[in-house]
Image (cartoon, rainbow, N blue to C red; front, side):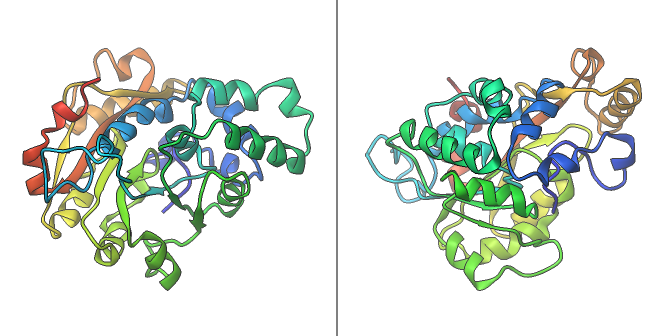
Length: 299
């Protein structure tokens, strides 16, 4: 598992620009400065999708109701490859990704020490927290990034465990046992079913898994691993989501070739200068029947 949200699988990583360094900083200013220059936008797309999905998770016993509509807590969110807690910020606060980018690239932010930035952010997020905020558990191997997310109150708890190599700790099992939604907005290409399977074995009820996956890679092996738990994976074929602009012609040529090899059409997407992702949603089969994916994504 990797904190790098902007590279593809290990077989093609050398054909893509890597951004590993921005996840090893003590705060997200470099993250927003570097990725902002490339129009990175996946968390923006995920914000509304994750909120809509949260209103429907855990409805196996009564598929005709919405947890949010009935004033119930939809449970814990586990954000895999969470980095600085950006998804948690967008999920639980009255902020947009554009506002966060403007905040962290502002002259004022640039003048602050790390400690001052953390204090500034702690007050900021506390003041704009949504009343329907849910607990968020972060999982990422980038310890400085997760430490920031904890320090400013975005992540309720965070773990730097690599489940591709080791089993989850007892503490991680305990923290995720009430998980209702697992989210991934980057790093899916570095993951396999090995990360998800032990977590699912420790969760009380099967959660939903929502992942934005680069079209240059494949989600098939993860979907096959989740299927062992009686879960089905659907791909949103109605649209794709721009991820970021290419850093150069080599990246674009690679992406066009990889997307074509995967059986998708790069025309109008990768050919126009951006990596694109597709949304994959995995959930128990009965819930997939009760709540068709197109209906869930309606705005």
